[in-house]
Image (tube, rainbow, N blue to C red; front, side, top):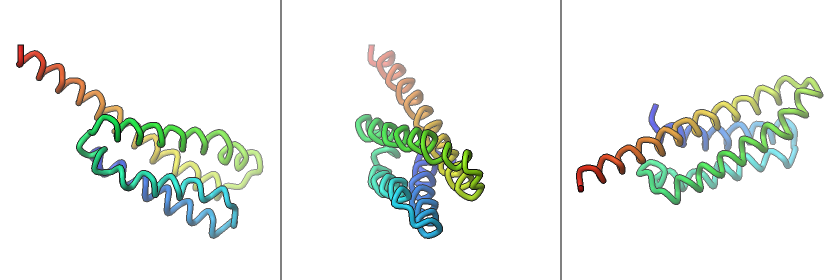
Length: 122
């Protein structure tokens, strides 16, 4: 898997699982991951080519989604004992973590390339 695949997997997972969550519960809270997945999709090219601004925006969005999923829906589902909601939210959290790991690796690789380029220019 590469950065682009991880980003697209995360965006589509948010859209798909959020849609399933809405259809099964009719909760308007399910629109948040759907909306964030739709916002992340157009950022794919910028993330793929490691545009600094686009990558940073995508990372911030992913962090917001992850923290929002963990703080409210996951805790409520665990306390209610609703295993299907726990499963859906956990899947979205896992894809968010995977995307964040690949984003971090992309930032580190870009930094290494920049340092190497600067050494060669001197």
